[in-house]
Length: 559
Image (cartoon, rainbow, N blue to C red; front, side, top):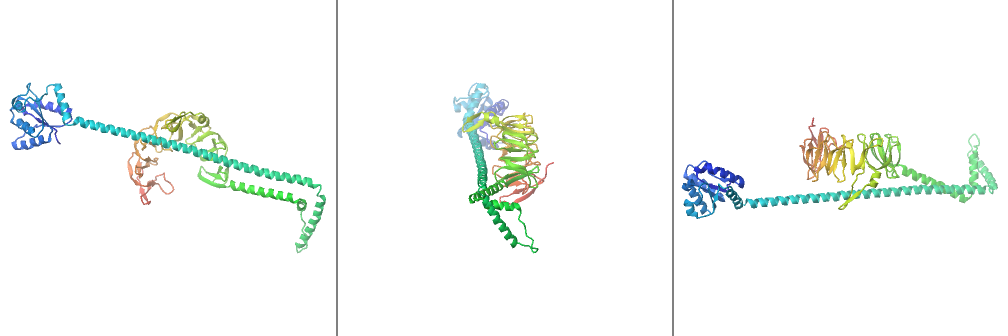
């Protein structure tokens, strides 16, 4: 290692010089070259000393009576002068320059090392001569520049994230309003069509009855003539269809009367009746067409969500029978015996498996279903009365609108959160008006402070939950809020049976255990259990490589 300061001294002054050298080295922050053991031969001395002086920038000559008598210190100083080195006389005894040094160098400035003020002056000069002050200033400037750049990057990232969330929120709002508008239009069209069909049918029936009554008195003779004609037709028909036994078939009286009435009815009335019957058949066909099931989703708790042609939802059982009629604008799966439903007024409630309303439809929104006996809901009145603030281009709710109810509909955690999610392992994620996430228990007590930018939607699993910090990276915390796996991944999926899939900044997937150790390196396009289940690890996983080929990897499941 190079020494930037060369100490020229007499070994007779070692006990005095060494403490000063140590103080100077520590204060300046540079190593000093000093001969502590002595050099046996002149040749070795010349090689070592010359190399040390060549590599240094400053020579401190420890001036004393002993050093003035030493031929070696004199040679060191004279050689250093010839090489253009900065030479600083340092008095360790006496009061002034003297001897051959004064003769050779004249009255140059010297340092009296015994004076604390002079010692500090020497330290300051050395830091300047060696460029230490400039180096430290440059390093501080670089650190400040890096700090400013990092803060600017964080600020821009936060701005972009805020804009993205605001855009997503606005897009969801617009989509919800458009869906509601279209649903309202379709419902209005359907009701108008039904009403018009009923009106036409009733009008046709009324006109037919009135005309029949008005004509009844005038058409007595015509009906008698018709009876004679029908009798003739019947006799002719019986002759043509005579059985081998020659028994004649008798036409029922009601058929005879129907024919009499039909033949006696005027053509306009006949046309009106025909049109009414045709229209009734068409309306019935249309209603039957739109009442058929056109879509269905997965089965949960023995019931499957189904949708008819009118866009209404209901439920069927495993045998295909509709057990809850399709009359709801939207529904969620049954969870813990209840299912969320949306009525025509745009409010959510809950029904049981008979279709009866267990909790009235009075909420603006709800989570998908009950979990651990509670469900998150958005209070409609709180939403209507919520205050908002405008910050830059986004709108944020000051007082929250989400809370939790039990299966009787009782509010057990007040609606005061901006967002709320389902309970998992005794805790539920909640978001405050600063858009930060934390966790509450079933009493509503805040167990983990709201400090995370995002959390896993389904909450805790295997005692851990994924969280995203302000840098946009994901890690994992336990139920006390302690970070057990630092935020270092572009995304981390939930833990299942001791393992979780993670993605690095190159969007490559790997697998970690609950200590954060990579058990499968991040080099795969995706990792999953199998073709039909991407969330459970039963001692093995499938990993997809760059060629979209699935590779089975066996794991050692943790105890």
